[in-house]
Amino acid sequence: MIDFVKILNNDINSINLECNPLLDFFQDINLDTAEIRTVNRWGNKITSFKNAFYNSLEFRIYDTGTITIAGSLHKYWNSGAHNYNDFNYDAFLWVLNDLNSKFNIKPQQCILRCLEVGVNVKPPLQSNHILNYSFLHKTKYLEWRINSDEGKYKQCQHSQYIVKLYNKTVHYKAKGFNVQGEILRFEIKYTKMKRANTLGVYNLQDIADLGFNTFKGELTKEWQNVLYFDNTIKAQTRRLSNYKNPLYWNELLSRPTKTNYYKHKKILSDLTQNSSDKIQEKLSQIIINKIDDLDTKGASIYPLNILSNHTPLNISTDNKCKVTGMNISMQKADSFLLSHTGLKYYYKTDKKIFKQIKRHYLTKRWWREDYQTQIKEIAHNIRNRYNNKKLSKEKNYNPNQLGLFK
Image 1 (cartoon, helix red, strand yellow):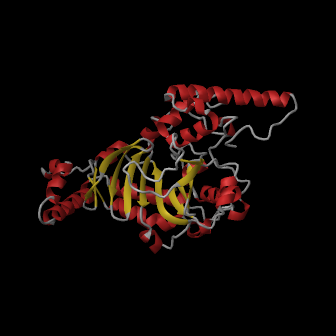
Image 2 (image 1 turned 180 degrees about the vertical axis):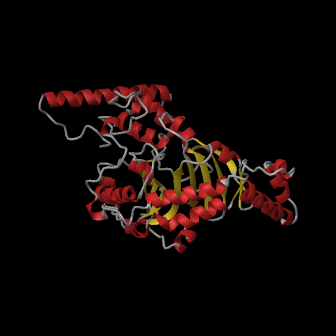
Image 3 (image 1 turned 45 degrees about the vertical axis):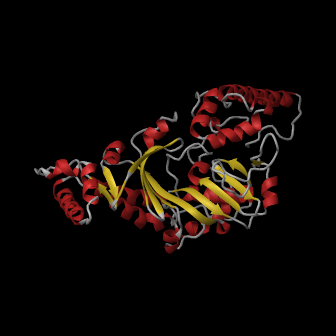
């Protein structure tokens, strides 16, 4: 339900954060002059910062003292691997507790600057079919986008929020995950928090207090604001050939007035209501039911202060590298170390995590080599680290730190 967040938190002690053994901070510098980067690629002045990553979250400490945390809480719950399963209220509380336990981050101190809320549902038709026939959101086009991490999706950007639709099954199968069945994701990304603030949501503690049903009205309303052509309409009318063509709606919207657009939208709505399987309405009810299932707030047996022993669902320690602690479910079932396959997966799908692994397990000697060579050397160093750990145990000697992500 709750996915990407960008948090402002100036109540954290930056020194304690930098000294946390789970975080390894780095800062962009010029390799020749050792100067800290103060301009971006376009030559604009920027505030320099140091950053670290943990389970898909990026921790930034700016030179001004500002501290931000950004990333997917859903992926955090899955050890940074994915967000295609269900992330319910109990799992959300577990993440809040884990952030408090590991980094002394209190949810009431986490002021939200950006927030994604959405659901993964089993649609009444194939996900791609629904995506292909979702033309507009309000009077703006739902545009196809491609992102190296999120894959191919449709979105519509407004001044304060973005609406997105994904085929999660295709997206994560392409990443090597064994995803079963159709999974369609519908989400709202609040790029400005004014609308979420009207719901009483200012920080992470507010979501914990209010529960997920707070966003049910928002999600269902925005799905209903999608102009969707229902291909199950059985009426005999020549208008259908126009209505199923996105260029037709574009032509209507391009006119000086939108009178004809609203006229034909009303006709399509009546046709859908009277002579179709009402796919949009069915999906709206599926979204409502899924939110009700995820919002276990009333029945929760995991108050925030007793969640330290709660284990996230669907996460098995057998799918983690014994050295790095990283998820290796994309590798062979009998794998126990992060190998070339897993490293290539992170290189292609999550450059942030790959860079984090690289910082820990690749010596500076190889940093300017091509990525295939770097992957080979990283995998070699991980095997050596495991063998050294195994040998030290045989000699009854335990070094202080062998795995850097545990």
